[in-house]
Structure formats: C-alpha cells, structure tokens
Amino acid sequence: MKVVGITACPTGIAHTYMAQENLEKECKKRGFDCKIETQGSLGIENELDMKDIENADLVILGIGIAIEGEERFIKKIVYETSVSECVTNPSKVLEEALVYYKECKNE
Image 1 (cartoon, rainbow, N blue to C red):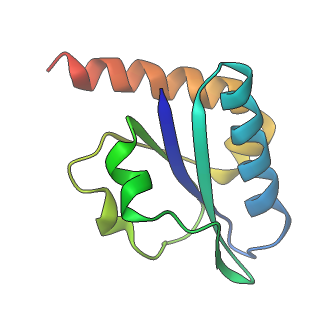
Image 2: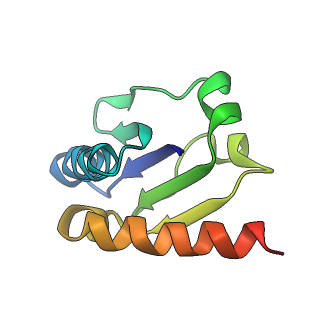
C-alpha cells in the first residue's frame, strides 16, 4: 500500500515533525510505502508531487490547522485526524485509516 499525507500543527514546530516521523515509522513497520509532507514553521517540506499523489492508495491528513494544497487530493481517499493523535498513537491512526479506506472501496 502507498500512503501519502500532510502533518501540520498550530505552531508548526515539534508536533508537525513528530507526527510525520511516527506515521512514517508505523507505515514502514507494516511494509507500506509512505511519504509525509510537513507544513510547519519552515514552510512546506518534503512536498508531495503529483506523481506521489496519483500513485497513493490512501491520504492521511494529521492536521490542527488549515493546510495549503488540500485540493490536490480530490478523487483520493482522504482520512483526516488530529496531529496530536498521529504523535501519540500512530498505530491507531493507521488502523482507523485502513478501515476507512476499505469502507470507501466497498461503496
């Protein structure tokens, strides 16, 4: 499975990057390909390109603020959660995102 996403917290410092790291680690543990863009105090980093998005099965938005470029994910399965949940419980986030993904595929 290919997972892409964005993490962004209100201050754009620690939680943004901890959420990215934790989601990437959890995906790697499960054998998933993963790329997470951060929108933090330094701006957009690790930016998703259109190829990343087109090839993705699932988009995870771990956010606490409005993000730039959300329109890039039209026609994708998007699971949105809080950035703090991605920091504290990335396994649960991924489990819930996979359940949501399966529900969307069965519609």
